[in-house]
Length: 405
Image 1: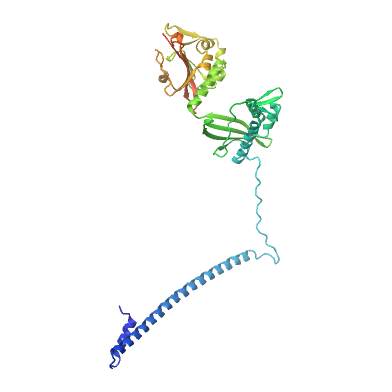
Image 2 (image 1 turned 90 degrees about the vertical axis):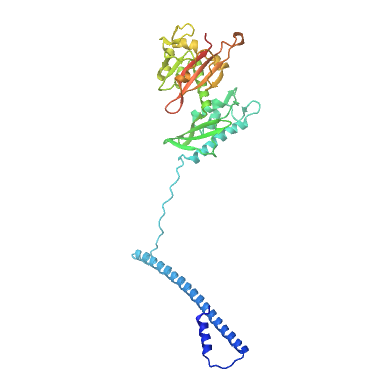
């Protein structure tokens, strides 16, 4: 479409006095006019661009002036605030407080790592020094000297227990005992720090590996004379089967040693401990509370423990007599097959342990019968566990099983 300028020119051409031009002249005049129009339009576009550029420059200048006056205003306020100062006065910068010095006795994860690394290195240095043939430690002559070697990172009591567990002293020479070493903290893995008292902290770490199994390690630290020292290391097995088997082993060894006080440590505090001479538990079974267990061997009273299979006669015995007849456990410790939560009915008598203790788990020490007796002299002792309110497995029953008529 023709714009207004071009229309005006065209109109003016038509208004000129008429005179005759040849076609070539007309074409030249028209071409020249079109060039003029194009040059005019180009000039307009350049002018518009220049106006835009000038507007942008003006905006930038205005913004710069705004910043300048803003700083002048701020500086003026600063001057007014200090108008009472005298000429020549030096304005001192604000005084910064001295950074608080770090408490060297503070216990934290970094401190724990440092101590645990020293703990491992101090023990490993002796292992590396030990003679390959006999395990002799040549740099020390007595266990007491080794204990002093550990004194910078652990308490005297813990150092003494560690030395007794891993070193022997013979004729003025010290030898390392070839057993599994202590449980080390994995310093590159996560662990938690807990404050027990102002001078007592613990760190705990769960580990699950081939060497230790699934365990929870707890290291205790005590502040003594300004130094944090390892005071105790605890290892709790988190694999239920392993935990139950280890607990049962401790219990059966306590029974064999006639140490019922040790046995009482594992008894369920609410349900007490039931004794059953046979795998079918009846309502007449003897039950003793946790606080009674430790003194049972000093009790000369006869108790009804049940009834003999076959004859039906009452089993009326003192605690010492019952242990001698039904809980002679030495042979089970030596030769028993240990079965964890794997109850089987081997004889004619019904096994109702799971009926009486439906939430229980068991550890059974089983002795196979001898060939000369046709295998009928088999017998077993079953330790029955239930969880207490804290979720710990506690002993609720000791049950005998064996061939009956």
